[in-house]
Image 1: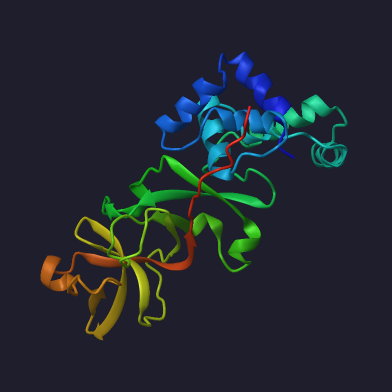
Image 2: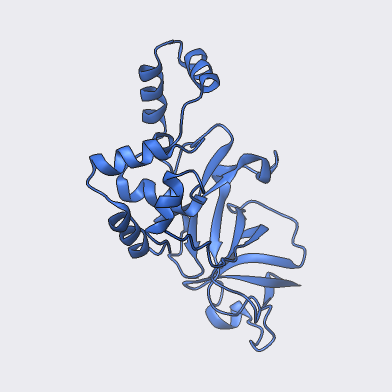
Amino acid sequence: MFSPENLFKIMKSKGFDNRRLANALNDIGITIKPDAFKAYKHNRASPRMEVLTGIVDVLDIVEQELFEVTPRKEKLLAIKYGNSDRDQAISKIKRSTTNFSEKKLEESVVSIPVFMQGTFTKDIKDLVSDKNLYIEMELLKSYYNHRNIIAINISGDSMGRRNTEQNIFLIELVQHKEFSKAEGLYLVRYGNIVQIKRVQFLGNNEVLLLSLNSVYQPINPKEEVGDDWEIIGKPFMKMNIEYYNNVQYLE
């Protein structure tokens, strides 16, 4: 359970007040007002996942420090680490989750790197993400390996006239394995351009790349870059996030 007491104790120790932390979050693209922290403090609201992630980055902490350790969790930690001492058990789990990009935040939550659609390096393994999407393992189902998944944040309107920058696609990387080449959405690289396109397979290793927005003409990657193209992965989930004005509390 989110603990406002833990948050404000950490903020105080690091010299942050409501306004300074809100400004720091806004600087990294997370829109929030200082008054939101008043709501957190008085248990009128809890921070959404995007805000939690930003707080963790700004305050340079691990996410578990923002949550209350319940008696049940204390017992599970003691069983898992073979130590009944609460502080030592919590210290161990904090150390085990220092690297969010490779380890689980919780047993049921995984971290997936987020990239913007556009110009990438030719080898997707060389990419470095400065954002992560934290998602319940249950949403991925048992047949998706979270270590073989990336997220693409779509910009522009090639995916449709109504597309916004809050559309996120989860992509299963094919890793050069053989797969059934059925027409559908794929993450495709041609030259240094990486985009999600509807792919039509024409035979003889030729394809046609179609935008969901009909104003864009189809692309034949062979005509554009010769053999310098490949299918990187296949979208299997789309997340559409739409924000509205938050509640304005009266003093």
